[in-house]
View (cartoon, rainbow, N blue to C red):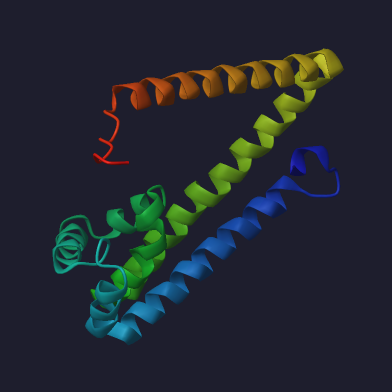
Length: 174
C-alpha cells in the first residue's frame, strides 16, 4: 500500500490515476467513434448478454436523456465504467461534452478512490500498530473458525440433501 511507502506521494499517485482514467476513456471514445454501429453489432454477437439491441437502445436513451451525466456517473458503475467511452463515441456525443464529463468523473472516481484507500491504509496501519501481533493472531483465528463453521454447515447441508434424494431402483435380477 502506498500509505506504508513514504517514497510514493499520494497526490502524484492520484494524479496518475486520474490521467490514466481520462486517457483510457478517451481512447475508448475514439474506438467507438471510429467503429460506430458495426462495433456494437460485433459486440452484440460476442457478448449478447451485455450488448443486445435492447441494451444498446437503453444506453442510447440514457445518453440522450442524461448526456454528460451518464459519462460522469458511469465512472461509479462497474460495467458502465468500461463501456461509457466507446458508447459515447458510437452515439456521437460531442467530444468536448464527453471530455468535460470524463475529466470531472475521472477526478472524482480515480482521485477520490486513491485518497480514500490511502487514508484507510494510514488508519489501518496505526490501528494495527496498537494491536500488533495479538490483533493479527485474533484475526487469523476468527478467520479459521469462520471457515471451519462454514465448511461444517456445508457438509451437513450436502448430507441432508443426499438423504432426501431417493436411491435409484436396482433392476431385478442383479
